[in-house]
Length: 215
Ligand code: BG6
Ligand code: MG
Image (cartoon, rainbow, N blue to C red; front, side, top):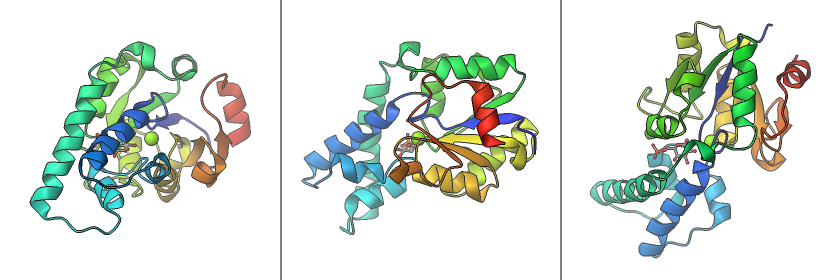
C-alpha cells in the first residue's frame, strides 16, 4: 500500500500545547481541591474536553451545570495561555518534516480533538503548509473513535490505507488503528507502544527513513 498522505495530531506533536492543557486543568483542579498530577494528566492526552473532565473527577459527582462551568473555566485558562503562541513554538523537526512532505508531493492534514485547533494552527502560521484541518468541531465522536482521521482522509481524497497518522496519545493511536491507518507514535513506549513505529519526537526525522520503516 502506497503512502500518499500524512495526518498529524496537533497538541503534543507539532507544538507543545499538551503542556498548556495540563496547566489549565491543574489550575482548575487546584482551585477545586482535586488532586491532579502530571502522571494523571497523561491519560487526558488526546481525549475530548468532556472526557478529560470525567478523568479528572475520578468518580466524583458534580451537577451538569457545574461540569459546564468547570470546562468553560479550564478553557478560559487554556485560551489565555495559547494567546502567546508564535511560529517559534513549533516543536523541533516539525517545520522540516512538513517541508519535506510538501516537496515530495504528499498530502498533509492536521486532525486534532481540540475545538481550539484552528486558533493554534493560525498562530503557528501552519495553514499554508497543510491541505486539510479537522478538529473537535468537525465530528461528534473524537479520539479514540476513528471518525476524525476518516474525515481527514476523505477530505484529502485518500483511502485510509494510504494515510499515516502521527500521534503522541494512546487515544490517538487507538483512533488511527480503528481507522485502518498506519501510525507513528511520538513519546514513551508506555504511551504510544501500540503504534507501528515509535520515535521520541520529530527532531532529526527524515521522510525517506520514515517511508522505509513503515513499508
Ligand atoms: C486534544 C488534547 O488535542 O484536544 C487534549 O490532546 C484536549 O488534551 C482535547 O482535551 C480537547 O481540547 P479542547 O481545546 O477542545 O478543550
Ligand atoms: Mg496530542
